Length: 173
Figure 1: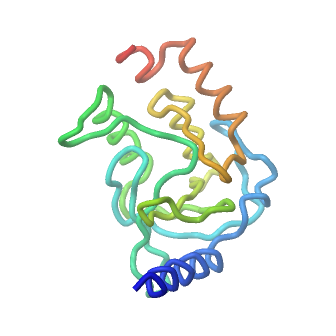
Figure 2: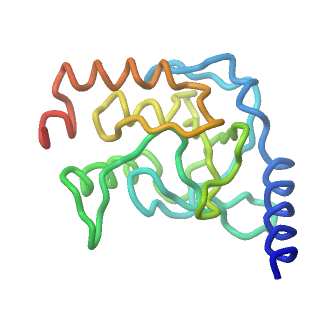
């Protein structure tokens, strides 16, 4: 049984690894207006679950991917609702209406412990969505090894959002 689980896990990692370029090709993009990607995979937004979790259609006949945005954490909604969770979810849905084409880039570890694809999302204008949510105070930073490509930038953006009291930093703290 363990061999089957490990085999499935390896197959998923190989499948995801073949679908997404390494984030090292981004050239350190960041900021709300910056963030051009050198390479990436285009997918379509199927549904936004909450501020940092969504479903993407890879457009090649495969099933939708459940995605967790790398480097950020937004307040919870639903039974475990937290301050500013509804606002964070609404902002992500505003930025990513169903059918929106996005560019995605993975880092070294393509999956979290729940099997969600860990990705950076870029809007059509090159805006790094993950970073934008931090800049606007809808998310705080949260990094886990080995996925730390934008950690310094995100932490600086979080400090600026806190100092300005924007988003959750003004409403909840």
